[in-house]
Image (cartoon, rainbow, N blue to C red):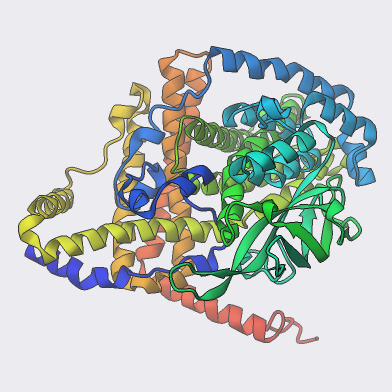
Length: 633
């Protein structure tokens, strides 16, 4: 016990001040907008973090947001969303033409009018403002349908409501909502989210657009430009982020902070460049937007002056689950094409569905879809049942969904062979459309770092608590003995995580695999903190492996929960879902162990250093630094 105390007191000093904002400015904040505005810092500090993912960084389980699988809809809500399935499906069958949209790099007026008539541009807007009033889970169901049909059109719709005017829903005051929400819901006015600039992509905190308050304090004058803005060429209402000079009320010092504004094209001084010529999602409008001496009334500040970074990150965070729901629909469509081909194509006298290589592909494709869909509805369900701690899970769902959808589409093309390579098959367009999903709304690279560093910061906070306890042991003996006992018991193979009580009987072995991964993961996080302290922020080779281990561990827990629900309800797909969950947990737990081994192995750490040097040489040469084997350059 004394040795434990000495170790914690000596080492926990190193975990103070882990600075994640400078490299993670595209990452989300922890709580929903209204809660952040209402809760004081002291209250936020005292509130227990209920995130399953965040807690595994301490090697602990907080099951409430994972077990049981959330049931966010009552019978009336299910009936309401079910009533939209047929008309939306009919729209895609009879009105929308994704190949035409892609070829023309636009969506025709007939299609957009039909979308307005369906209410597709105001799915989550409250009915009193003209919207359909869907909650997050109901919205996920609509995203699922759209993702299986036309991703370009999905971005067109999503850029409008998932981020375009989402800030007004989250942060708008009564007057702002009454003025703008009816326009974007039924007034056929498009919205856009304008954050990215030429010099600030992932580093959203470094934007250069500037808004200067007038001498009379009645308006701001905005100047600058934004790039790659979805709906940027057609939007008349934009959520725009700009630097403003803000005075600290305590110190009186003035410094630049980002502020969010509602900007109307009608204010004057707003113009757009031509539509960008993109690889995919061609029918969605993407353009540069310019602001020249745009006068913005002070009442159009969204949220508080200087809170723009928080507003932007919460908008992105609030909508990430929708990306997982959308891409689960895309995967479903790809798997359907692959399965139809596999069950009809005959080679070497047998249908190709009977060959092991094809069977493995289809099984893994289905497993990736199952995990993605399970994440989407778990996170949306958590949000609808009042969760505040879903930001890491939402980030993971975006990373996992975008990479899984690419994998599934690629494998579908492989199964179809030459036919899959042809444009008429439709998978070529889907693959081009999919590529952007690993880049926008927070690149997967940045989100991996965000997940790892946010979790490590939380784990470091626990070590600091123990440090304080050992400085005053007389009044903290309960905490000290609890921690010491927990560690001692785990060293002899007892007292570890046990998820078996949360799952159905056929999934007990898989639950043990997930439990073991949680224990290994928590131990690894602590060892990294002790070894690197706050310098861990610079160890991206290690952080990426840690993030991948976290993603796989969360994915295991999610499917264990969903499959248990299916078994307990005795649904027709129960046996199939159990098989997918068992197979997923078997492979995912192996990947976790491999990543943990790479983190803890000196040889792998040294090899990361070798790769770093290789990269430096390539950059110094502006390309490859080795000769052609014929020595002919």
